[in-house]
Image (cartoon, one colour):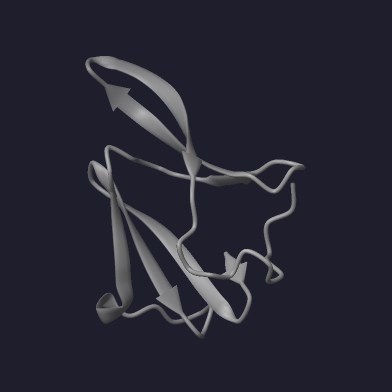
Length: 87
């Protein structure tokens, strides 16, 4: 996902999702790991028409398969910048 001039990659790593940042959408480095979201698997970002973001998590939770959605709050100071995720 692009926000301003930065790119973010959300990568499922077992039972959590790692978030990487880069200036190049085709190259993400291990050193640029900026967050780990626990209990979040196969995540996708969702943006509603009001500009609110949500993150999904799909997989096995307490013995049952399901989909969870939670509010996602950016802390990168780029809320007013253009991004690549349409509502």
